[in-house]
Amino acid sequence: MSELKLLAMDAEDLEVVSAYTQDAVVRVGDMGFVPADRRFAFLMNRYAWEGEKPGSRPGKGERHRAAMHFDRVLSAKVSGIDQNAKDGVLNLLSITFDEGEAPAGTVLLSFAGGGTVQLEVECIEARLQDLGAAWRAKGRPAHDIDQKDA
Image 1 (cartoon, rainbow, N blue to C red):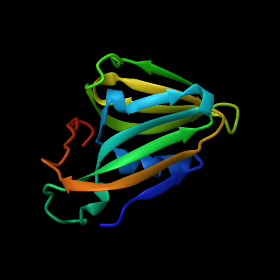
Image 2 (cartoon, helix red, strand yellow):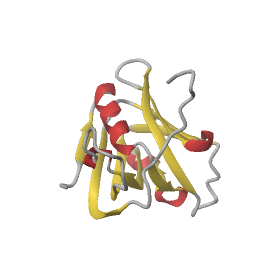
Image 3 (cartoon, rainbow, N blue to C red):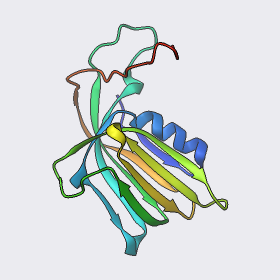
Image 4 (cartoon, rainbow, N blue to C red):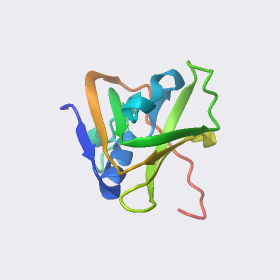
């Protein structure tokens, strides 16, 4: 499988990036905001959903080491995450955008357990790139689905 490289410049692009990063595993110590550069970046081990064949029996897929960064970030706020637990592991559920005064708005990284990172941005400018390392996943991520919604 080839290495993934994605650029997000609007909310629709960010939805695609969110799909590719769903269930990524992120160490708390691998996230950071550099105000002087107006950049928020993090490393992750993302589950390669794109490697699964439609209609095939779900198995153990691959995880890829990847990096993502957001440029033009004005501020970053963390909620529900112990930033002192550098070895703490987070499971990324989604990345969404709430538009303010266009093209500015808020990017929200939502993690399992309720933790969030909220980025106030001038505009969406994000990059996701696999770093080359890939390995067989220990298991396929699964999500509980409320039977009323199924």
